[in-house]
Length: 273
Image (cartoon, rainbow, N blue to C red):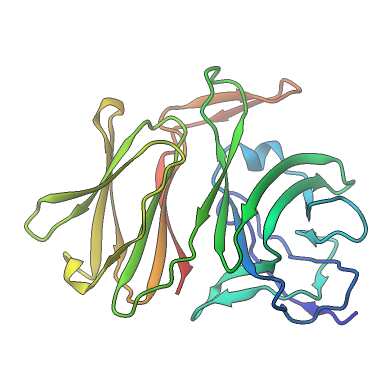
C-alpha cells in the first residue's frame, strides 16, 4: 500500500496536535468519488481533554482491523491525504464516505472511551464539536456532540460569518453587530448548542481598522463580550462561544475531581476559504 506522510491538526484548541492515520483494505492514494464529505473535529469542552487525555485512536463505525482508523500517534504514515479547503493550507478536513457514521474514540489498547454518531450528507463540509453539556447536577460530567454544517461556499467580495453557542451555562445569548454610528444590530439569540445561518457581509460592514465588531450579551448572567473579525473577502468564519460562565467542579466515574475556573470566551475559526 502506498503511504504518504502528513501532519494533520485534527482537534484544535483544547486537544493536542495529533498525527492523522488511516488503515484500509483497498489501496487508496487519493480521495475518490465515494469519499464524498469532509469532516473536522474540535473539542470545545473544557472537561473532555482532561478526562480523556489518554485517547489514542478514533475509529469509524467498528473497531476491527479493516475499519478506518483516524488519529493515532503510533500510525505516523497514512495513505489517505487530508485536503485543504480553498486557499488556506491550514484549514484541513479529512474526506470520508457519507451516511450514518459512528465515531469511536479509544485508548491505545482499543478500550472505548467515547462515541458519537451522525448522518452525514453527500458533499457536505462538517465541523464536529465535543461540548460540555447542561446538567442539573453541576458536578456531573456530560458531553454533547454538536455538528455544524459548514457547506455554504464563500462569496466573492464578502465575508461569511456563522455563530454557535457551545457554552452550557450561558443561557440564551444575544449576538449583535456593531454599526458605524455606534448602534447595534441584533443578529441572533442563541441558546446552548444553537447556531445561526451564515451572514454574508461586504466591506461596508467594517467599522474601523478593518474590523467588523460583534457583541455577545446575557444581562441576567452578566455576560458582556465584545469581539470582532478582520474583514477577509471570500472567507467563511465560524465564531464559537465556549467555556463556563461560572467556575465548576466536576467528578468523573472514578470520583476524580476536576476544577474549572470561569472560562467563557469566543473563538473565531476559518472553515472555508
